[in-house]
Every structure is written in structure tokens, then in C-alpha cells.
Length: 257
Ligand SMILES: Nc1ncnc2c1ncn2[C@@H]1O[C@H](COP(=O)(O)OP(=O)(O)OP(=O)(O)O)[C@@H](O)[C@H]1O
Ligand SMILES: [Mg+2]
Image (cartoon, rainbow, N blue to C red; front, side):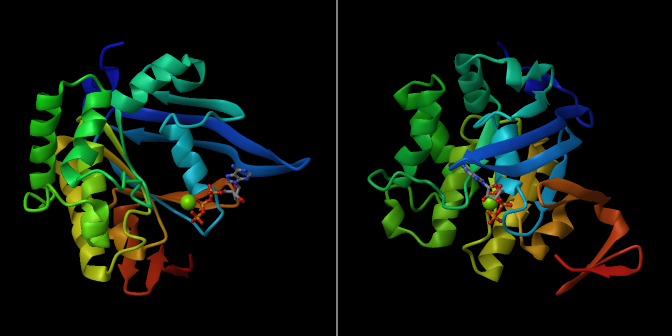
């Protein structure tokens, strides 16, 4: 496989979520995490997924990010139907097309910032020297050039989150998935992180998808997808909603989420 996700022109559909459902079987009980979810995302778009806890945001991310497969329906990245790929092909997609930023950072505690980022590049086939040089570049991009040799427990939460962003960028992904990237951060640091994601989508054409409870993440989005009970409640364009501190208005109606 070469790089079809990167070759898609800006503004064309890069991800197609087609009627996916996900059911977990738990002690004989069926838990419906996603029900009949469909939507498209364009190359270079910044999409925020909003919804209460348990509404299915992370489950949806796992499907788009090739970390899990839907019980029904299909997820396509460019021409590739993820539900039809072998595990080896899925690993290629994860390494070469997608960058992940997890809520809990998921950094390796025993490694420095530089090594945490470099190792993700080594996994995609780079040599140690290449990976170290690229990791340094990515850490400088997120403002951590002065923390290369610190381990996660020697950095603040915001700095660890920025290492996680650098790691997500090291393989030049076409798609960046950020699951609640500001959940553990203060207002100012959260704002900086969001600004960074927006800049990546605007200047590098990276498609950014974030899951969040955080209303301040919405103003940078091109569209906002609202989830409720495993379904898409609705999708709004940024210009159609009015956001004020504490409230969001759509078509003159105030909504709570
Ligand atoms: N591995 C699993 N086994 C069983 N049920 C699961 C599993 N993963 C998720 N679920 C259930 O699926 C539903 C959706 O969970 P999910 O983690 O996607 O929600 P979320 O919107 O990301 O919530 P939060 O905002 O709290 O992160 C929940 O009811 C959850 O209990
Ligand atoms: Mg979640």
C-alpha cells in the first residue's frame, strides 16, 4: 500500500463512516455503544465530536482510527475499507495515516520526551538517527525543544500532552485523532493545545477530529457532530452556531450538552 490518504485533495472526502454499529457483549448482556452512525469528513477539515459521557465518542474514534472494528457497517479512509483489511494492512494504516492523541497521554514512563516521540517513527520503519532528528523537530514545533531529555514524570500535564501531540505528528499523518486532548488541562494550556491543532489543520491540511466535552474546543471547528446514546444527534457547521461562555445557540435556540 502506498499513501492514498495523503494523496486525496483538500476538500474531498477522506473518511466515510457508513452505517456503523458497535455492540459489546458483557456478561451475557448486549451493550450498544454505536447505532447506525453515518457521516463523511473532508480532507483538511476540523471536526469536533461532542456528547455526554458514554455517548460513544471513544468507541467511534477507535473505529475511525483502525483500533477496533464495527459490528456492522463500514469505515473507509480514501478508497480503503478498513473492515476488509488484514491485521497487517490495518497496522500500516495506523502507522502511516493516523496520529493519535489519547486523553491519558499514554506516554512510556521510562523514556524521555525525545525517545517517546522517536520510537513511534522507528515503528513506521525509520532508522534511529532519522527518528531522533524528526522527533526533535516535532518537539520543537510544539514548544518543547527545551524538554527533550525529560521523562513524563518530570513534565507538567500540558507538557506531556504536547509530547503526545509531537508523537502523533512524527509520522506525518493525514488524520489526527484527539480524544479529549484538553480534559486534564487548565484553561490557558487547553487553549494553546487547541490553537496548535487548528494550525495543523490550516497549514498542513491535516484532518483533525477531536472528541470533547469542552465548549471552548468548538470555536476552531469547521463542523460539530453531536452524539447522544450511540447515535449522531445532528451535525452543525461552525458558522451556524453562536457560542458564548457557558451557552451555545443554534438557530436562536439555546442547547445544553
Ligand atoms: N469494551 C467495552 N465493553 C463493554 N462496553 C463498552 C466497552 N467500551 C465502551 N463500552 C460502552 O459503550 C458506551 C460508549 O462508551 P464510550 O467510551 O465510547 O463513551 P464516550 O462518549 O467516549 O464517554 P466519555 O466522554 O466518558 O469518554 C458506554 O456505555 C460504555 O459503557
Ligand atoms: Mg471517551
